[in-house]
Image (tube, rainbow, N blue to C red):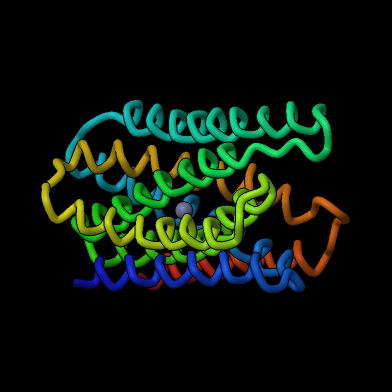
Length: 242
Ligand SMILES: [Zn+2]
């Protein structure tokens, strides 16, 4: 039940991010700077220690989950670069030459990712309420940027607002469906640490290589950096109390 509520939280967060992209962009860098810190803090202070706690309990070695972590990071990096290389080739072409389909493909990638966010929430709740709650915080925090990116990618590639809103709705529903999917199966403890490792790599990439560079793209800002630090410190205390 908690997992479903968490999925709904992700739904609301994604929708808010998308509406933000459609309506106004002031103070955006503060929000993104803070969420990058929160996601980073969750990975370092909660997900990775949790992985080591579980592998200690079941007596397996650390290599598998850490390879999963590196894979999560690199797969996400690869997917993002494949999409970015499309951007580059478009810049070389005529300025009016926009390919709406690329917007759909990029947003589709984000939707698949959001489904995995939901699976992460569901599996974390299977492992325990504390882990479930912290993963939920990480997902809700960064899903705002998922929603925002879905809408920006669609609009930037020349899609109509109506289609951007449709993709946003799909992206918001995806984590809820991901949570529901985990009700259909039980994962072994080994499977869980592998998924958590993969998920940690994926969240680490999102915060460090996807959200953070975006935050200071125009100009470095001390207040924003301060909010990033605040996000990580906050997650340190949250991880201690859960
Ligand atoms: Zn996400």
